[in-house]
Image (cartoon, rainbow, N blue to C red; front, side, top):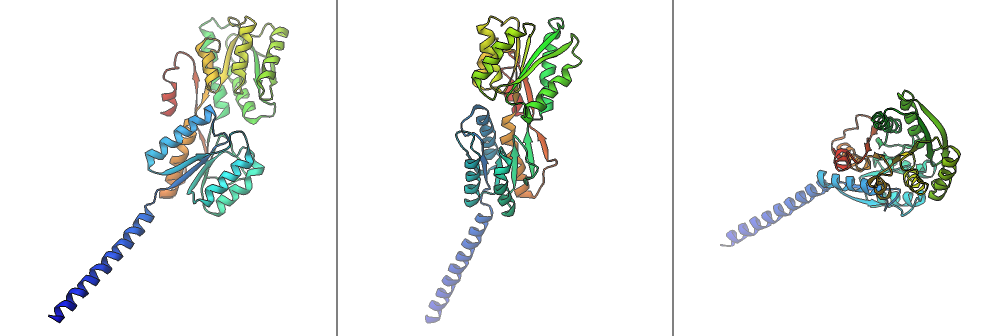
Length: 326
């Protein structure tokens, strides 16, 4: 009887040990299967175009079964972006999506990411001196070509009248604006009715300055019949000025970025077309590239990935957002 008790006790101890070992292995398994954590450090936490990037980011988190957070400053603040990347590293982020908006200031933290083995995907702009596995953003020259194609198609329906253009941008040394502008100019050079760039000016990203310059330009150069914007404030500024000056039927406005105010002017018929950048893909595809890299060790097929653009008019307004996602 005593021997039987010893046998039972021994069996219970063995079962207990086996159960404990199973629990440990299960715990280890759960640790290995812990969802990836990806952090998107945006240059603007509450901005219409970056909100679209956030939507793409969060859709991808759900699709790939990973965790993540979307963080960043309220206004352009590279120091705060660096701080958020530092916090992401401390919290154990597996991958980071961000924009090197101030390359020199942000290089040390991107170097720290590389040292810790945390892969980074750049969106919006590139810093060749910082390590990242890929870039996702707008091909500026292609954006200009697409905008020019939209202009050509529009004016072809009007009999190809001569075009006298005014281009406004943020600053004259803004790389994005210059490449987009040059894309427009190259594609419009063979416009059937003849194309002339009358004036190209900066507005310092200031709506008031943008409007003041347009008022002066439209008075000094009454032959202008086309405004091309390669900075976000140009479309709304031009729409307000041509409305106030009674030039709605004379001047065609091509804007950039489908923010609410610009879209409102499109709906009113004052802005003819908007070149919309695909911010959704910046967030969405960024997660996909990081998941493939982190789970399977798969490096992106190419470093530079054009997120795409689309020429938006009232003809495709109801479908363009779905087109960008696809």
